[in-house]
Image 1 (cartoon, rainbow, N blue to C red):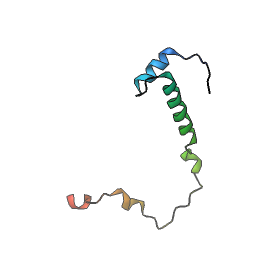
Image 2 (cartoon, helix red, strand yellow):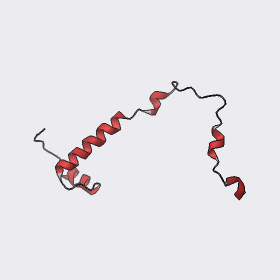
Image 3 (cartoon, one colour):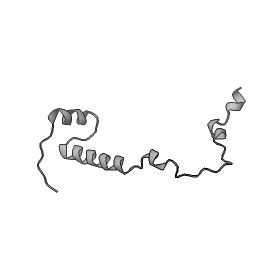
Image 4 (cartoon, rainbow, N blue to C red):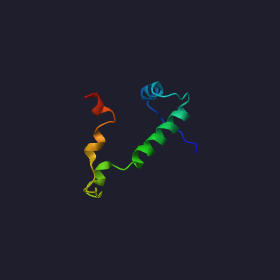
Length: 72
């Protein structure tokens, strides 16, 4: 889709510093893709109260890495 827009040149220059793209078209495409990707992610706070964790699940055992006991 072809469109004409006025961009903040200072913002565009700064955005180029954070990317490997070389054209404004690529920059806008990247920005739109990241915008959509970020908004598709489920906000973890929305899951509060919706996940049932098994009472037998031992989360503390996952906190220790293998070999930690051997170093003590």
